[in-house]
Each structure stands twice: as C-alpha cells, then as structure tokens.
Length: 82
Image (cartoon, rainbow, N blue to C red; front, top):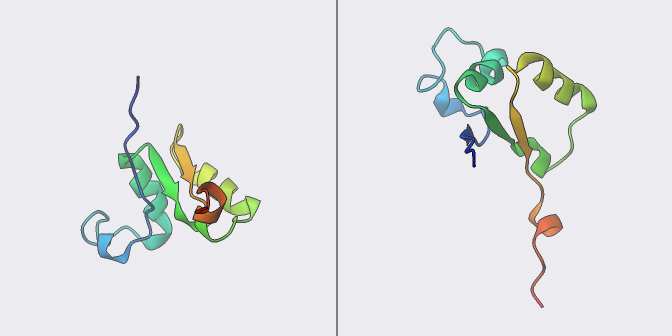
C-alpha cells in the first residue's frame, strides 16, 4: 500500500513567510507547493466547478505526477438525517 502526503490547498496568506519565501510571487505558489507535496485538495470545487482552463493551468504548471483531490459539497456526499 502506498501513502500520498498532501496539503489542503495552497492559497493561504499566513503561508507567505512560513512556507513560501519572500521572493515567491503568489502566482507561483501552486508550482512551489507542488514541489513539496504530491497531492493537493482543490477547495474551490466545494463551491463551484472551475472552468476547464483553470484545470489546464494547474496541469501545465504543476510538476507531474500530482494527484489533485477535488472537494464537494456535503449535501452531495453525506446522507441526510432520517
């Protein structure tokens, strides 16, 4: 069995000086965090499905293989109470 360690997103302002060096512009945070993790949770999919161009951009800028993990609304995945 293999284990993949990842992160829940990458757009966190408090990571600016903790994980990202001062010199890393925000537009490069995805590429930077993907050097350290092999999977990332796509929190944006919790609220809406991004355009295909957004997914294409992640694919173009991420070091592959990366395992993206989309999230979804609880009402789609959790059985409502009886």
